[in-house]
Length: 159
Image (tube, rainbow, N blue to C red; front, side, top):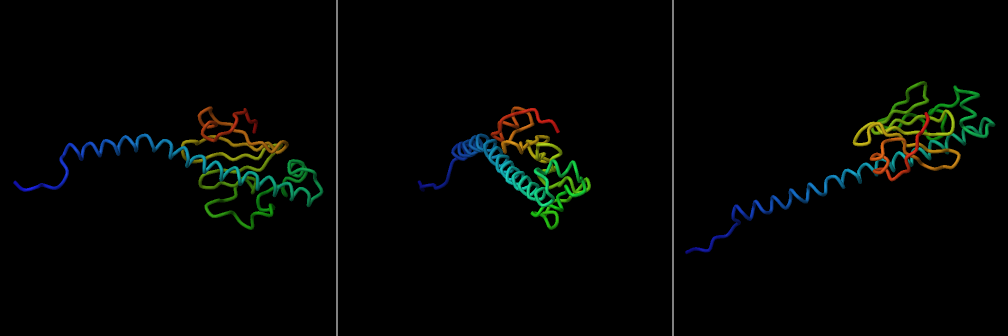
């Protein structure tokens, strides 16, 4: 008899089963990591928006961006922040320049003490990340699961 090389059908099915199990275990974790990366992107943008808003308020002689927005609403817009010459790629300014809609997030300038980002796509749709501009602490205004994925404390944000 000749020596036969190759795999039997049972061996191939066992390998396919193992790969399917590993994929089923790994995909949810992968999605969670991707969501956390998106949230990190939003956090970085929130802090940049806050810092730029405070610099803009200082230029006009106000102690905070919220006070500038209350006193001179026309000057409290994204296009006046020093970080934007125009809307970033994949984003557009709406609501008279007070909101920036991007592919994954919608950023809104603060009316009081919060800068906020709303997740537009993915598992966290509808979640809101808030930056308390008094304490510079990030909070989550979504469901328990959404906040857990973001690794943020849940708080009832009032926007």
